[in-house]
Length: 123
Image 1 (spheres, rainbow, N blue to C red):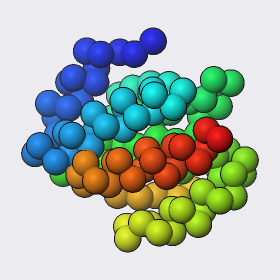
Image 2: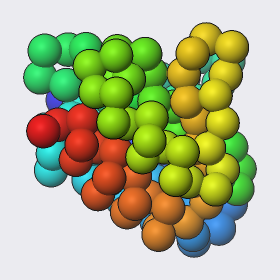
Image 3: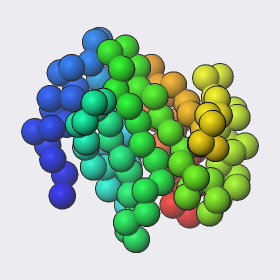
Image 4: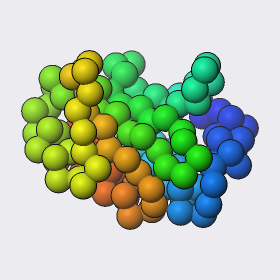
């Protein structure tokens, strides 16, 4: 179930219209493709994306001016083409856990994640 109150609070915590639009786009784009966005607030604020089998595929961490998007191992293992897509983002990096990250700063970045990464993962 979508925790609207939590998402609205997250959006308010972000600095600037660009990153707020990006947040909204990721949530709506994920839902349209069958992913479930689940918000978490621990030491950091994050949103996790699960598929219909409740596999945790993606997430992002909220920073003030951007969102750090993660392609997790289960997504990468089930669809190797995601690596090539992620490499096409200028902010692409890999971390020590074997996950990939992409920094999302605006609506264009978020649309690209939805259209390329989410859509590819859900095919």
